[in-house]
Image 1 (cartoon, rainbow, N blue to C red):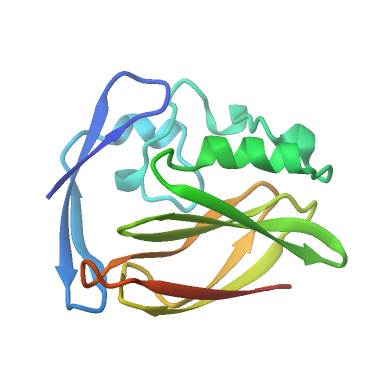
Image 2: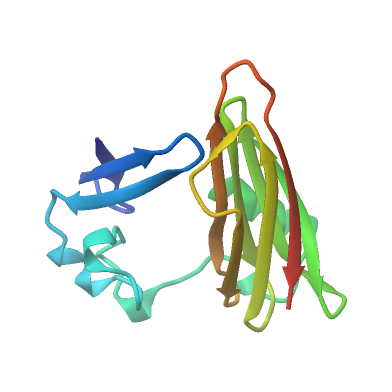
Length: 183
């Protein structure tokens, strides 16, 4: 299938050809090929990101990156988290946030996005230092598009996808229960 991604700060789409495998319990990406040129993105890609997967704002260099939430680092309140969630989530999905703490500082937030077809979990850190987050999920009637357990390292203001699942049998209610551990 072709996947079109609109690039930030540009009026064009990047095109990827992706092959997916579905073994009834899990959907995995078998292979991908970028059909649009990616050489221009070398100037803005983050360390560790394959250039062929990068879609970033070419008008900003690596050292010019500005995170609008950096002013809030260490000053977490409901308004700041709501602003972040509103900008980082899909408008077509219901959203819930779950706060988690490190040394009595609730600076980790699990973001749950759901609709009738499935569920997505992201985790974001507003902590002043790097943290490790372990996410586990138990589900019924969901095809897993990611592993049931994930451990991620989060730097301040990092956000990572930890789980995505889609409905397996239409019309049958799906269930997902998660646990999170922060170190």
